[in-house]
Amino acid sequence: MTRDLASLFVFLALAFAVAAAGGAVTATSVHGWYQGLAKPAFNPPEWLFAPVWSALYALIALAGWRLWRRRAAPAGRAALRWWGLQLGFNLSWSFVFFGARLPGAALADIVLLLGAIGVTILLAGRVDRVAAWLLAPYAVWVAFAALLNAAIWYLN
Image (tube, rainbow, N blue to C red; front, top):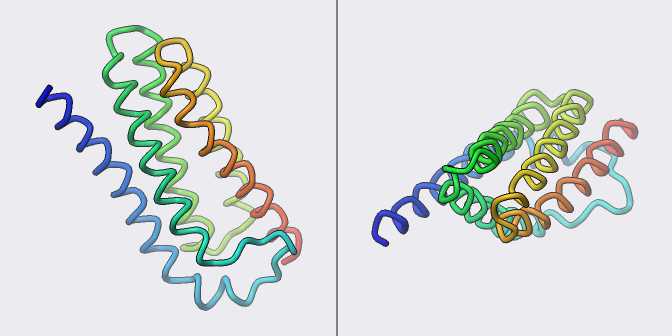
């Protein structure tokens, strides 16, 4: 049980390290460049992003941990690899959108991210339905974020 709990903390630390890195690069542009962009009417208020992403990163970590616990199964290993890949796309989006200030390239990244989340959910469903469902709110939010990204790219 102690090893299980320690591995959960590793997954939480990994997910929140990605969140912190993404947040650091976002902070470089959110109050300057991003403020000056034209945004669609459905753009949420700025205060909403931090609590939503915090909850999502906790769910992402929990799903990854549950998949790690089922890594002995071939689908478990595959799901865990895709879990890592989606986390990489997640991190790179912040660097492309806010760091490089390239909404068009970020749109390509977020489409890849959404696809990787979808594959992760499909594979996770074969070994741990709870892990798959834990990723569902993340998929919905990223789909919304992709729409928002596309609108910002189109408007600017």
